Image 1 (cartoon, rainbow, N blue to C red):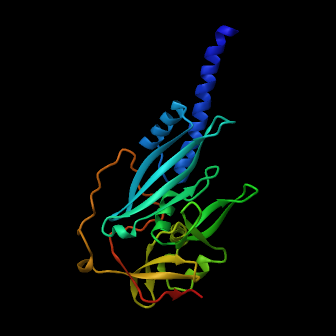
Image 2 (image 1 turned 90 degrees about the horizontal axis):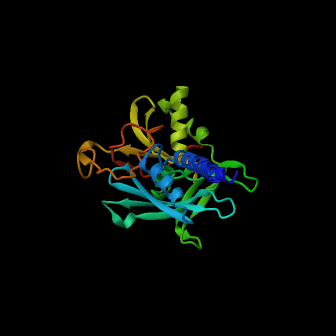
Image 3 (image 1 turned 135 degrees about the vertical axis):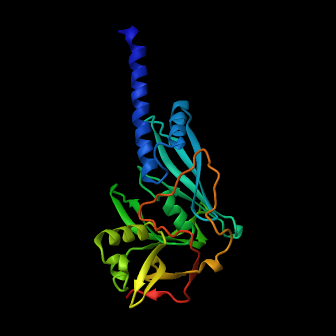
Length: 273
């Protein structure tokens, strides 16, 4: 019996590590950090090292000239002996305007929290409908936006919550062509809820391309007009980015193809009432 114990415990250790790794990989995938990437390999190495905690790094360009970096913090629970993805710190770095750089820590609870792309959108000033967990461990969704004028005790920008915003009802107030088909309507809603700005076609007799984003603070949407190519700043082509070892590619689901276009905000927000 004793001769078999080392093998048994070794097999148990391997099974335990694999189960914990699968759990963490699911968290990474759900939170938008990719699947089957070098980051997953580094998590496995972190677990095998057995340290009390470890941090990993990744970054992405969700928009031209804006690098979004993330430091992922993994913590070992002493009683259970398992690792959890505890939080990540996201930083938006604006290459053409460093004064706009923003950073915030986002906590993760049982794999639920703000996604990497949502973190980028929130730090870029937009609102997103994020997942949270209540006191009964039930997942709920609510609209939030960062308050760049106020910080909490940990120096994080505070959340502003909006619980009475019906985005779909607001959108129906406008002649948006993408709302006419069920598939494109669902895609548009899902993308806006993640905090994305989306290119749509307003057709009030004449089709016009517009960018829109959710504006729960005023229960409206914000509308932007794409600038002509002659007014675009910087390079005419897509910026080439050197690959980082743990680069995370933006999630293409629900995204619009015209990401290259610069934006100029219209002077007034359009009410969806």
